Amino acid sequence: MASSNIIDKKIKIKRRDPTWTKQVTRLLNLKNKSKCDILKTYNLKTIMDLSKIKKVYFSGIGGIGVSALARIMLHLHKKVIGSDIVQSETTDKLKKEGAKIILSQEPKNITKDIDLFIYSPAEETNHPERKEAKKLGIKQYSYSEFLGLISKDYHTVSICGTHGKSTTTAMTGWLLEKGGVDPMVIVGSKMKSWDDNLRLGHSDILVAESCEWKSHMLEISPEIILINNIEWDHPDYFKSLDQTVSVFQKYVNKLTKNQLLIINADDKASKKIKTKSKVFSFGIQNSKANLLAKNIIINPKTHTQTFDVYLFNKKIDNYSISMPGIINVYNALASIAVAINFEISSVEIKKALKSFPGIWRRFENVGKYKGATVISDYGHHPTAVRQTLKAARDFYPNHRIVLAFQPHHHSRTLSLVKDFVKCFDNADILILEEIYAVPGREQEKEIKSINSEDLIKKIQKHNPKLEILYSKDNEEMLKRIDQNVKKKDVLIIMGAGNIYNLIKSLK
Image 1 (cartoon, rainbow, N blue to C red):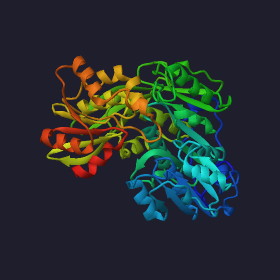
Image 2 (cartoon, rainbow, N blue to C red; image 1 turned 30 degrees about the vertical axis):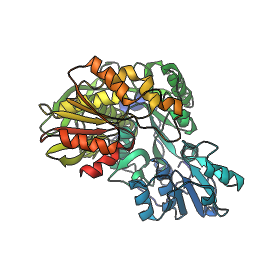
Image 3 (cartoon, rainbow, N blue to C red; image 1 turned 45 degrees about the vertical axis):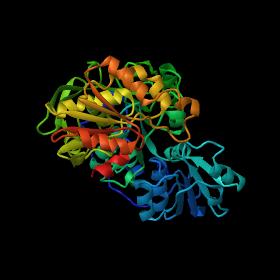
């Protein structure tokens, strides 16, 4: 935090080569923050007096965001209790880390001795635990509200956009870590090298994934906003692309003239964003981008991509990443843009990018099944599906691609059905599971509005050559996979619902 941080531990920041960011500093008129500021110690004083907080309750503790805050409280030696409706890897690990986990959500779970109540943004005001906490006068914050409070005390780098948020957040945190900045990172996925979705850090820099759903990112107080791309998603909240862009615009409006917007110069919707702040752009197609990737080369043998990077039309280096797809070149460029503005050298960036381990469920190679390579991926938007399949073709040419896909949310499937119909063309076999109904976010009329069998008919009409199989649930999906997967295939398990549970069964 700028005036307080979570762990009382001093760090040393490396001196930077002043020639590295000379052009950036001149263009953006950025002032180097005093290194003395980084040496301060912190304890969240401006949020609240945490010394008086003994017990914290997390409702929906299995969520990828809420669980990160729970880990922060565990590091602060608070008593952590959390509830969820299902057991998961996340709840199991939190239990091992010292949290008490309750696999039910009932009013009786909430007691008078709870000092702070933090809940999942998916929970409405009529949620039984929230109602009881209110009745007992316990202070409540949603995940995004509490993250917003934390961000006020940090120099916050906010990573947002429709696609690539988690990868870019993790990669940015990784580059800053390897460059000696020692940031705190909160990411909507997991990193094996960190405490899953949290890197605690000991500096006053926070890198935070910021979600647009229900305008939650508006709670954040950033100094740098990075927008990867903007596309229509979350149709249960956003009624159009224009409405989506308007929320991003409101977020960017929070920046002052001396703060920074990092933006994708190739993204059509992002070009609509206006700002009074400083701007730093990245891209592949737009030659006017401040940071430009050229000469992208895919190597299927090494499963790497290499590309040249130009800063203000001057080549600075050639970089390599072990992640497929053009989306990951954009993610890397975005992360490099942040690293440059933190004065991290090209040598450090190159080394860090090469060693970046990737994150959970983002084209994650999880092993073999019947001789087939198994990839786990969180993709649930048609653009993400299309890009992932193309990436698989790039890294695994001449291999059969079997996609086991579970659509996520009926309103998303219905609203984007035309795009879903066209996004599977790079698969050889599509095994389509029934649409995952998101607990607490779907009404009966939405669930009845469309099903996977409806979607299959439309896909077959568009692409009669694609082999498509239907699965009513995970159990049937396992049978379909076992019957159809062959040695040397690439099997992609994809979706944001409970299809991930298949990974354990396949192993």
